[in-house]
Length: 353
Picture 1 (cartoon, rainbow, N blue to C red):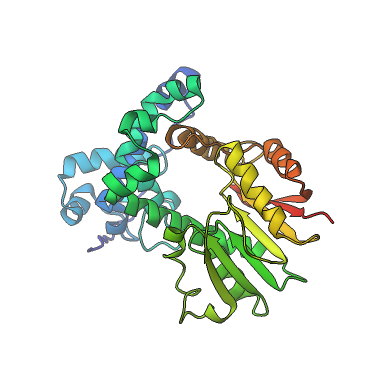
Picture 2 (picture 1 turned 30 degrees about the vertical axis):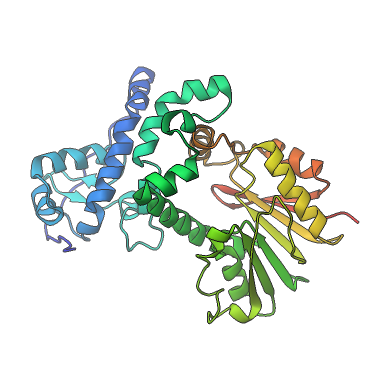
């Protein structure tokens, strides 16, 4: 795609003052427009088209193949929220947020922005009151089948967006996890329910004397990080095990990592933790990494994810205390609780003797 670059020096439009409560509520109830605008910009690849210098809506429209007038309206709406900036002369420039919609940005959120606004989301959000009444998901009522069955059987494009978004999120957070964890005294690490193994790969790259195992469902580990697979740069120190951690974990390790999988119903969470405790030797470390819906600077984000989990699979994100209760209930001794980044926390645990 061609990138538009022009040369004028421009002055940004001054920010709008903070609105009063009545207007803030009006803005909240129009939140769907904001989400739809981000989705439209991502699908049209407007951020990829905009270069480092200001450009007009007409110039950008010629690149992304849209009508100039509607594109100007889209950019103006997004600029109100800091996604792009509109200048006094009518041109538009990048902001820190709009750059995150570029596909080539190392911290890109383009795929995640698409995933959170997929067509099925617009069908289930209006049923949130039903989910709150029943305490269960409404997805099956709307689509006639379970969430992941629907994705893989009826919404192939959405399934691909999901895979890309989860890969992007995992790759970005894997580096944060690797930077946080101390592996002194650890020879073998197990990434349980570890998806494609980005966390494990990052840890093995950082610690050349450590070996590790990735365990997840067969269809997930079939797409494991190429560094871990036969012929990959880490294959000599990595093994891949297909299985359901709720049914048992045939892996012995010094450190077990469980990241973002304790979002199911309580029975599944209990079974997964019991499997870890049964597999681990006394004194083994267990690090549980989760999003929290309290005591975190990203509560607007994590509470939204929590509600979406309720809608699509009947799951839930944890408070700090609810996760502590489940970990201690499984028999783990809980030590330090540390932030991994603004939206993840790590719970350091030990299997007691």
